[in-house]
Length: 265
Image (cartoon, rainbow, N blue to C red; front, top):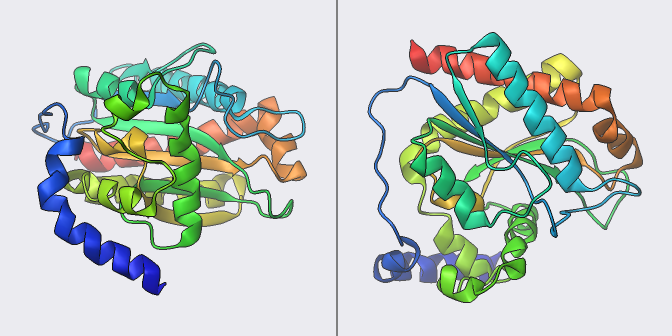
């Protein structure tokens, strides 16, 4: 804990001098709060399978949930423009995912993933992350795992200005850059976890903060949803089933509708 505190103090001194490192292209904040365009990001894909269960790959579950979520949004709110960072099994670089949302002037960014832990087959539940300073070692580990995708990108050191996915200090510095949308992001994340509990009676591990490369350059409220643990046999069976994927999408969609109603008011 003392070591982490020291890193936070060091990071706070360094932030002003290194801000230019991560801010490679300017983004424009949106006026108004109407939710008219949403970007749905299916995590991983192509050569990057993500985490694995006994017979399930994260990239496949994420894609099916993303497509079902988009279908539900289009069906109930046809006035909302739904865009996908990927709609097939292809590899998309992390930086391109947020850049795609920015180019399309999105009002909301939803990144869908699955969790895993090698330490236990009984750990289960959902958790929704927003960009911010990780408060626990567990949050840091999730961010490091998701951010390690950049190791599969060509010239990743140049693209991310030397960002090291294994460095706690790098994640602390990264976590400070999406503060403009933190309130709305937290509101949406809280709705998602509440819907997981009330609709599907899933175990919720709560709303958390950590430094995710896929979120840090989003010029809009954004969340990363861990829909369950593929390392848990029961949750893997649920997440790999058509019924489970539909229910997960239903929960996120219900949260989206509540968020949109609140923001459009």
